[in-house]
Image 1: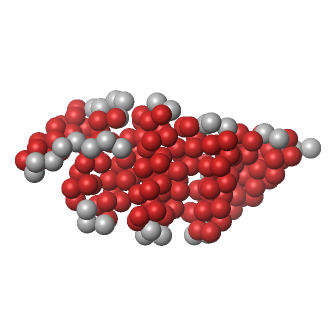
Image 2 (image 1 turned 135 degrees about the vertical axis):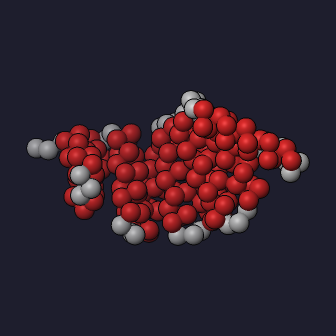
Length: 182
C-alpha cells in the first residue's frame, strides 16, 4: 500500500520534472492518504502545493479552495511560517487574476505571519511581490515603500541590494516619504 509520504515524494519528483498533471494527481493522492492518517500538517502542505499547481493550470476556483483550506489547517496548527506562505500563494493567485485589492490583503497577511515566524527571507519575497502589485496599479510611492521594506527585512543583503536600498531611501527622502511598517 502506498503511503502519503510516497505519494508526496512522487508529486515532488513530478513537479521538479515539470509534469504538472502527474504532480497534481500525486499530491491529491497524498492529501487523501494524509487525511486518512490524520496527519493535518502534511494534509495542509498538500493543499498548499495543489493550490499552486491549480493556479499554474488556470484552475483558479480550485486553487482558491485549496489555498483557503490550507490556511485554515495551518492556522489550527499554529504553523505561522506555513500559513504565511499559503497567504503569499493566495496573493499570487489574486494577482494572476488582477484582483489587486485581494492580492494586497493576502500579501499583507502573509508578511505579518512570516514576520511573526521570523521567516525574514520569505517575508522579503512577499514584500517584493506586494511592491510589484502596487507598481502594476500605478501606485509608485507605495511600491517604493514596500520595495525598501523588502530590502530592509532581507537577512542577507548583497552589495547590489545595499546600493539599491540606499538609492531607494535617498529617493524617498527627496520625496519627503518616511519608511513604512507592515
